[in-house]
Length: 516
Image: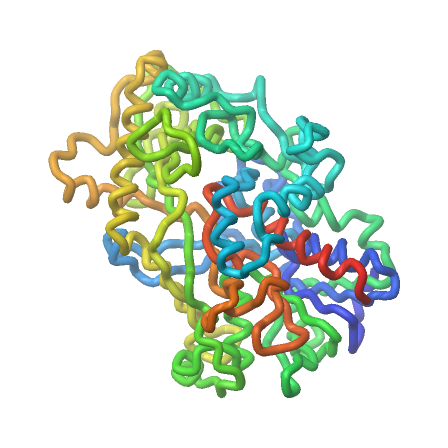
């Protein structure tokens, strides 16, 4: 692998070394004749805290976090939200909470309907998920075995508070599950985690192994920003990059953007590809008018939280603080099918910045949220250069459906939190306290919600006029430009989207398996 000097041309240039990009670099360079260049803005991961699962909340805001800021959100009491995104090899897989949840089978039906392509269905994605996984249940025809990414099901490490939470959920009618990834998602279980031997595994570690990095046909450029794409008629001729040695250009037969739901559309817009009105306002000449670029922005919120003072000291988490997520149908703990709300157990006093957290070990939180928000936001550039900030407006809680489901999610959290099974831990409820009206409930939720770190949808796939990529993930207007990351998702999956992003990348790699 060359990583000091970069080639002037390549067969494939991948922009972004995060979850999708790391996988793609490994998979696409399996063909020896295919020259692959991976461009990553950050450096190699070297902070030892990254590999300590319990340290993940403290990673946000460090030098390798892009630390984006949203616009003030009317639906969350005018708050500005920090969006942590990884700026290093492995991307946000180095920062997130390591939860691995494929989603519910019904989550993928809108993808099929958007594209008319059954390859994006649960059934056809199942072998793709399995290929990525090294799961303790692997070999059962549902979970994968021997794949690059470990999927760990905790047992003895699970906190006694989380065990009581699981018992409380079961007492209300929620089924007991063995992980969230079998296709049955409604129920209670410890979270499946990308951990091996007590250590976080990033996508860079899982896919970019020493053997892969030793391939002569793979070049990795760290500390290198993608400034803009260079277009030539209906093709991309190359990409202008800015690295340690200044600006240069790499020409390529194919360009793959894997920079995530924020930077992939931003790079398109800086290159003159996007909504004409947005580009004009940002001072960028519009070369290809694609109105859908930057639209359809979605994200999960979690209420933080339904807070309880503990009767006795809460042992620190031996995992990563958020140890169990209970997915369910709103208003009916016994209902089956696709979940629409979630309640999570935090082995710590987890609250938003609007509330004062008690000392660690003295309290615990039940987090609450909705799985398929209907609010849709947008992203746009405000100028042509890399240093011009992104205007991020997730439009949180802008539909009555989302607000109504959030009320039911909070009620479900309190129902679980007040069950007898948690009585040995629960001294009293601290938050939200006595809420007398729907308006008071909504005001509390607006103050409590925080991002679940799942932005997606800003370059969605489909066949309609506003779709940005087709079902092969090729940009609608260009022959050799592809987008392979969370931005192509037409809609959110029920849980954390990391597993789905890895499946998107593996699906694309299989499509290219026989081409040079």
